Image 1 (cartoon, helix red, strand yellow):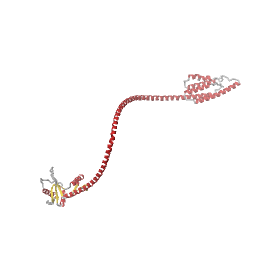
Image 2 (spheres, helix red, strand yellow):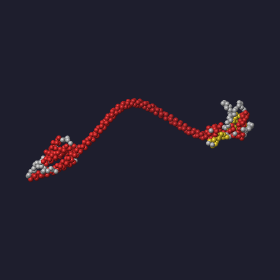
Image 3 (spheres, helix red, strand yellow):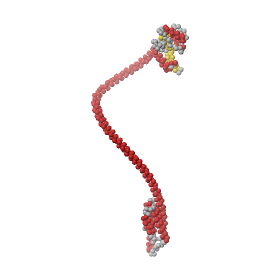
Image 4 (cartoon, one colour):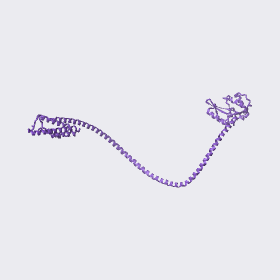
Length: 405
């Protein structure tokens, strides 16, 4: 009877003790070489040991062989299922090989001139397991390299962060020193503020005592205030009465002003009507101690000479120099009152004949009308303003405007 345990010990017990730290692929190669060696041995010695000739023994051996065959198939199926569900790590694969070897350690098979059918299946299973373990080991190696690279990157990042933290720590230490200085300064300020607070409390106490005194005096002052309020109320009532009187006087004054303006206008109109009989001659040289008769003769002479009239002077009722003598030596105008308004108007309407001859003729205006004429000349220009029988006219954009008097 061939003892397969001795063949398996070459690949598993002795070699397992020396290749515990070797790769799973090496263990699988040892196991495959052991199985091949076993097949060669069986082919060289097909019957090393004969079966017993006793029928009962043969029957017992057959039953034992059938039991062993069944147990071998069950163990093989368990081994294949455990092989297919094994993990991709080296330790788990090593445990599976040890489990298969423990199964073969329990088997003793008698060969009847041929190789058992489970041996090729076992070889294929271990070859597949070997390839799977090799692939898993390559994957694990690549993952380990990737993990090492990531670890190096992570380690560099951690180093940079540690350096940054060290710098931050130095900055924090500096800030702590500055904060300590600020706290010391604040403590000093707090001490000063406490002293000031004590001084303020003293001032408050003094003010409070003064307030109490003033409060006591205020009670006496309230009575005086009440009397003053009564007096103020009386004055307010008197003021209201005065306001009413002032309103009445204002209204009456408005009426009087209107009346005065009307009367002033009438007086001005009457005065101007009285002056409409006169004319003024400007620019004639004045002699020393000139008499009204001389002034009359000079007036008529200038009119006849410049305007082409043939008057003998009987048309003039009275003539004389107007106003007081001037200190600057400028001659005063001659004012002449005519008997006839017709003669007066004829002379006035021909006054343009005196233009550019050094003399001029104007109407005798009242003080109010003269002021209105000057204002109109400022507004419209001296060449656009004229008078006729005491009334004032102005020209604005080819439109004649009467100036109200």
